[in-house]
Length: 191
Image (tube, rainbow, N blue to C red; front, top):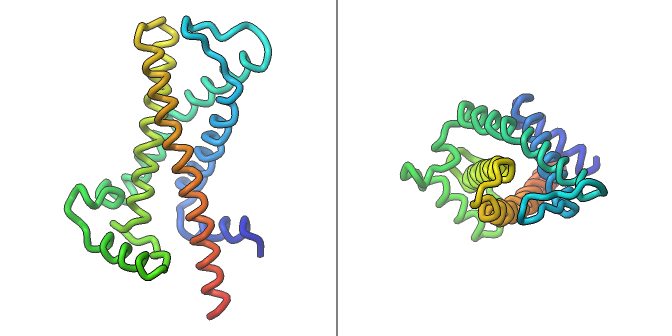
């Protein structure tokens, strides 16, 4: 069985369809945003040019970003409704028991299972927060760009900075997810 089949089976087992599909769509749209952003060109005065790949890439980025705003909000609402806020941010409500167990397991060179209020949940919460910040700053930048606001360039720079965190999260979360699925499958094969 290849890693994509293992991942598909794992996601089907762990996530309800609405969460799973929204997660995958958001992931694909974010990847497309990252790729397309390399071909964008928005001048400081707001001009984007009138032809060529820069024009189409810029508008593709804007449109996809506008689609991501309600999708991300929907995803966050679905996840908070399903798990609750403290599931993703247990340290804000003083719940450290599972985090402590997870760190002890990591120190013994074992990958902890995803548990409520644990390290995996905290990482998921950081992802939810970072994506919310990126789509919010992107929307604010788009509005500022459209009205010619003096602060538009500053928000664009903030958006680019925050996008770096999402890129790092996407890589880290994806690799750890694949590692988790691989190790889980390896463990099942031994049993």
